[in-house]
Image 1 (cartoon, rainbow, N blue to C red):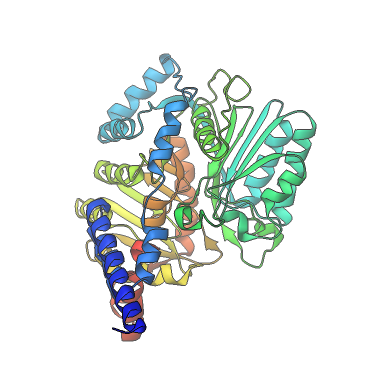
Image 2: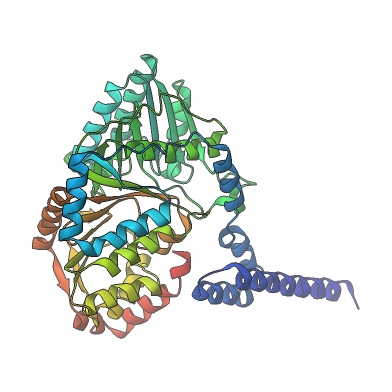
Length: 481
């Protein structure tokens, strides 16, 4: 046997071993059978390439480290306010008017291990035009600490205003910590992490993707958006720090979104999530009164933070969404920029609609990621034929993440209805129980509905053969999107 034949034999055996290893690992560890089939097929149909992609993107290596970290973070806030007469009256009213949501509240506690916290205020901030000035004002009011976590923090007109505010806070002696996802930090040049460090601020990237760590963590991103000032004022939602979210700046790619200002006991839960992520990225534990002051009441909203990620919090959001759909009796309204729910959530949506609940889903008419929109179109027929209603909202691109049930319960935060958010990303959301807040959110959705176009089953089925084939092929990539 000549030398080339030997090399050919070794290459063939190596490819066989790699594909076999992918098959065994996927079969043993992947929970979604569709993902198993997709990864195994890729490994065998694209020798070497499929195996390498699986090693880079298909293996969750984060669980052990995250679990080990949380065992060291005994400082995580778990203080709960004692219930007063107003709390008891509210709870009695909720129970009598919405008994179907009692089980949802229990499910939330079971999933998170956290009680609902009374005494919160939640203010809706529309687009960066309202959110950014409020956030910068809060930073400028800081006296003890500022913790900021964002998926994207661009070095642009919006980002520079935040940079200046953080520099001012640091100059006043405020403790400032900034954490930016490593992939998100690369959306602009120069890199904002470098800019912050150059200004003397304490900043870090989350899960750096530089070689040799690129194959290990490139597919696990921190998509959370959290700002906490003095441990008392919190902000979260779906808005990244970039000028595209400020419509008044007339950006080239304008983006609508909702963000929220929170005060009250739930802010300590935002801070706890930041503290864990910060310790994970830097090994520094932040604790004490500067970061976790005594919690006080600020409003009438009952709220609970919902942390979610590819570690021990895996699929927590999917379970909570399914519980909310099962609890609904009147209506469900969902606003999301990306809609690729898994089979179990599709079934939950359909069963909810078949029970007579109005299920309305609002999607952008033109996505900023064509492949995701094509894949979504390929599966919309599954919910339309069961009675769910889908509406396409006109530009600007709507980046809002929102779910409202029966005019009382709302889920706000960073999570999209797609595999990346529900399985791969680190996300943070807040579930809220309050009729006034739900009314405010419903008014915002009503405004979207007035300009939206309803997408009928006939519209989906009437697409051209080429479009349906394109969308169907894009759908095959759902486990990777």
